[in-house]
Image (cartoon, rainbow, N blue to C red; front, side):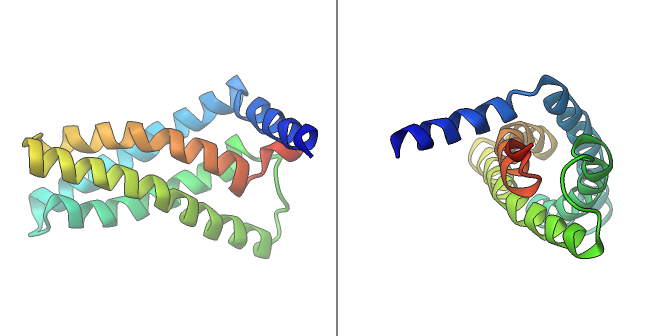
Amino acid sequence: MSGSLSEAVRTRFRALCSTARFSQFAGVGLVGAAVDNLVLVLLVELTGLGPVGAKVISWELSIAVIFAVNERWTFSEYGAMTPRALGKRFARSNAVRFAGFLVTLSVLAILTTWFGVWYLVANLIGTGVGFFVNYTCESLYTWKVHRD
């Protein structure tokens, strides 16, 4: 059993270490971060929403953009392209990214509330921390890259 467990861990680790996929994921993440931050600023500055409420809306919009680009580019060779399979991956992606969102939102809330950090800087820091949670979970759970 320990041999199969250690092989499973090694297989997943090797899958995560794909430089090309990591670079693509990071590039897509930058697009998503741009959408997230643009919408966040617009909502905070032009509406009565505070940074945390605005973050919820900006996050979901950026997740839809990130999923669409990752589906077509980063992970295009993984998974069936049927509407059902696509819908399942989108649902898994939202569930997975919710963990990253909680990390990002927690960092944003802690930095702005406790340390007085400007909301946009706090959001960027939180996004960086959440990135690694997202990359790992999206690769292994949403698109299952270790199965190729």
